[in-house]
Length: 276
Image 1: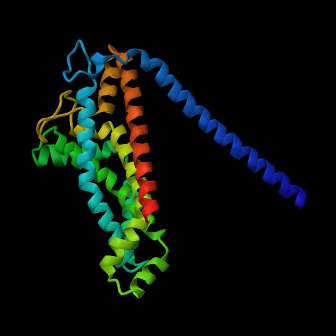
Image 2: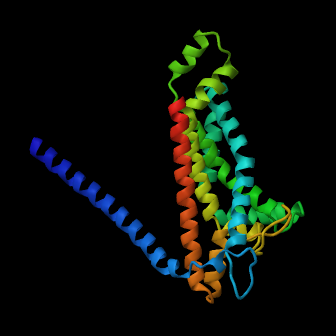
Image 3: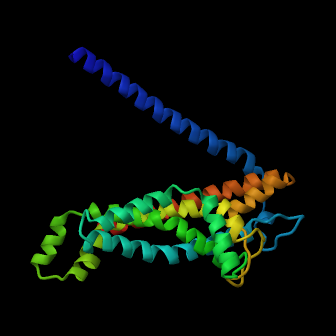
């Protein structure tokens, strides 16, 4: 029996290392492919504030992506965090309401993004009359990201030991003070990790934004104007087939933006976790 067990452990170890090597290899190939194709086309003209048919600048799309990300997080983060606080700290654990909300959130997480785009087109763009706009795109992305934010915050709060709460109650702290002064700071790294995943999905979203935010390449001066995100910009260039090099350059910039956001968020999470 011990021989079979050792053989099984060796097989599992080999499979684990093979899976890790395959994952790293695919990642290195994709990043290298994008860098080789895109870096030669990164020029100062690509970062011009004005977009034209001769100069397909990505700067308006980059600024629009920042606005979309900020608007989406501004809408869904407070709702998701407070919903998670209620489910973990105030609702009875294991109750029917908690199970129903978790099932609903997990179901919404599996809905394809194009379905959210069609919903945003019918409700925000058409029914509410917002048209193709930054506002419609932000609210659509907020609905799409909300289950991810809520579930990640809930798991982060559940990971905080109950002894922290019991110690705070023993010192005379109330429920609200315990949640905001003890529990939330301890769960901050997990909450920020969920926000990192949410930002990555926002930045890389295309289908939902085509139907709600539109494809106009300009720097928005009003939330009711149509905009184009970086991912939509890259899709538009590749679908036209006239500026494939600039499309790969946009992919390089998009990759850099995601790496910078992840690095800053990880640094912030480490700093907050050290304080907690």
